[in-house]
Each structure stands twice: as C-alpha cells, then as structure tokens.
Image 1 (cartoon, rainbow, N blue to C red):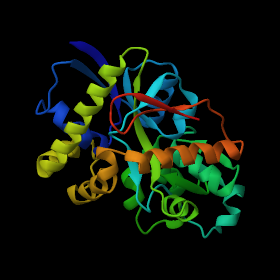
Image 2 (image 1 turned 60 degrees about the horizontal axis):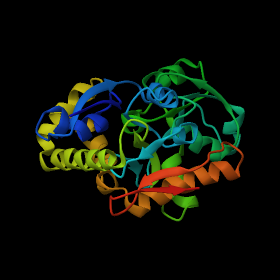
Image 3 (image 1 turned 45 degrees about the horizontal axis):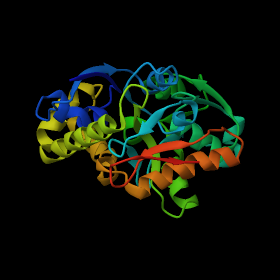
Image 4 (image 1 turned 90 degrees about the vertical axis):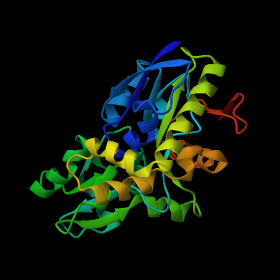
Length: 285
C-alpha cells in the first residue's frame, strides 16, 4: 500500500469532495492517505517546493510548479459566477486598478482573473477570510473575495465586479477555473495516478449520492456559517465538472493560462492532464 500526503483546504467544498475517503466509506487497497489541511495559498507554496504527493492548488499556481499532473476529478469551476470584488465605496471598474485592493493570495486564480480584467493594481495579501474585515475597516479600498464569502458578504458592501461573469462573457461561456487537484509524477507512477483519480472521483460521487451526510461533515469547515449557506456554496462548486472536468474544464484551464501568458503576466512550459480515457498523461503547451 502506497503512503501519500494529500493536501486540501479547510473549506466546505473540499471537505465535501473528500467526505467519502475521510469517512472510510470509499476506500482503496492501493493508498494510505495522510490528510494535510492548509489555506489554499499555503498549499500553492507547498506545491512549488514539491512537499505533497497530491494537493489542491489554484489553477493560477500551476504555472509555477513542476512535475504535477492535473487530475480530471476535484476541480472547482464557476458556471457564470466566481470571485467578487467588493467595496464600501462606489468605484467604477475602470478605476479599480488605481485602488488598494485586499487579495487572498498572489497565486490564487482570483488574483490572476483580476489582473486580466483590470490590469496591474496594488494588491495587499490577507488570509481570504479576513479580506471583508479589512475592507470594512478602510485598510483597503476594495477586497477580492473567494469561497463562501462570495455569497455572504452582506449589505455593508457593494459588488463592484463579478469575475466569474466577466470570464464567462469574454470567453463565450467557458466555466471559470479556480481550484484544481494535482498529483506528483515524481512520487507516483502513471498507473497510481490514474488509480487515485478514480478513487477521488468515487469519493465525490459518494458525497453527491449522500448529500445530507456529506453536508453535515462539511459543516465543521463552514466557519460558523449557517447550513443553508454552506449547502448553497457546495452545490455551486461541486458540480458535473468536479466529477470529471472533461474537455470543457481542460480547455478553460488552458485558456486562462494562455491568456495570462499572452498578456505577459506569467510564463509556463506545459500543462499535464490525464487523457479523456484515463489511461495516459497528455501534455499541452
């Protein structure tokens, strides 16, 4: 049995995806899993240093890592919704890049989307859950919010820009790629990578088939939010593309990173995916 480290975030949607595995309802004779729970930006940085065998990362962060394969399962895609820029002030979108904006991490997909949408801006990094607080205090002019804060920011703030809708419009309806799961080809063989992808897919399916139990499990990662909000958030980001991103999901990840490369925001060599038949690794430039 292969011992592997598995990184995921302390967020309800990640917890939901791993419920089948974490609860022991979905097992594998091939893997002994050690769960490592960290904020997404910490996982992004740990992937750069190749500290984890399997981990959730931002789609943006994939440009900075080597020798990880993107799993077909476990992706977080917005369907005409995504990260949101909020403020207590009335700000025109064209003026956002002149503002001081709180961001949840430089390597988050939300930050990359905002750079694509408004150009370079002054971003101040905070733990994602603290961004609204710093907008409220006036420490920053606006905040880029992710996770359940996208749907719970309340009447205190104005919605300045919905980056999910912006991406949907400029790509003629592509889903917005936010989080992905990657697996090291340094420490696992192609056969093991494919077996884990299948295990993860089965865990996600189990959660969807046992929705009430999986939501209850996810509540421990809900940061005190009500069950109704957590269920709404999970249903937004655990969708058909989470089970298997297929060509639609792959193309959206490729489009995001190619767009950033064309705009001289980042560079990368290639992207590694499991092919649609789940039998080999494919490379895209």
